[in-house]
Amino acid sequence: MKQRKIPMRKCVVTNENYPKKELIRIVRNKENEVFVDPT
Image (tube, rainbow, N blue to C red):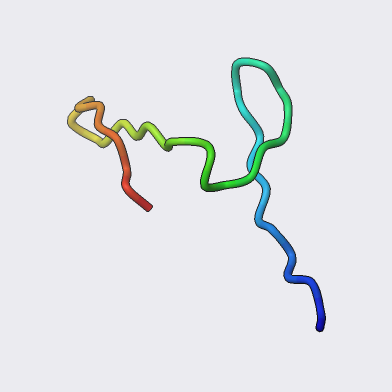
């Protein structure tokens, strides 16, 4: 069976790569509101 590729994302604080599911995404919109993006 083939192994699936795990999507990786880079932490902006440590500059290290982690699996996407281990990190959260924080977003600022045009109105300067900050919130957590669940995607």
